[in-house]
Image (cartoon, rainbow, N blue to C red; front, side, top):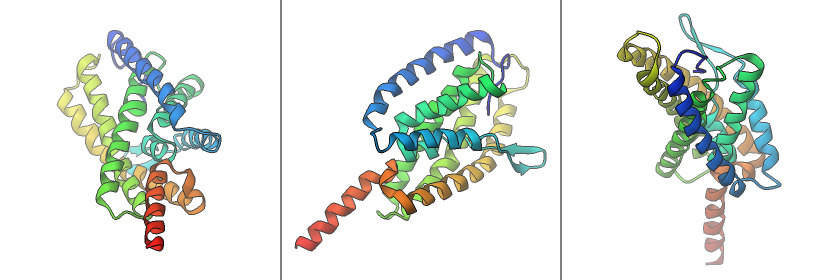
Length: 229
């Protein structure tokens, strides 16, 4: 999923650097409303965890492997604004330290993973959470679905960039079929890792999970109203 230098032409890469810079700039302002003295350390831990987890590949099919993208996990744990910043930091560090993703392609990768991946997965999480029963057990289930769907969506975003400015000659339809089918399988692994991690945090400090805090307050209000009546 990490696009290297030279795979997408320079004009397209520069255009996405500009778009991603605007998105990250907006996220800097939005993150102020999500983070507090209590939740800021979790944002740092989430960033470190995702950075380390992306270094580990798991087998998907013959000759292919996948790794955690982390957009859904970060969005549900610390909120989508902070998650955008977290994934962006991970991508920049990986490009600088391990050449995992090109420097000229950083805008492409940030757009796919920090913007599209984070916000698409969080929107899906909110929709699924609204459909499922309103309890703590629904959070990991919604997280699994959001993380699973996030991966092929991010892959489709890459195909969109490929269609605009690819320097290769492979047909877009061929690239889309290969990317989408493979990343649906990768999404299963993404969903499992995300759901298990969210479950672990919920079991110990549910008050820190951004995707559950609002629902938790609603449940407390309902229970207090019943006890008063």
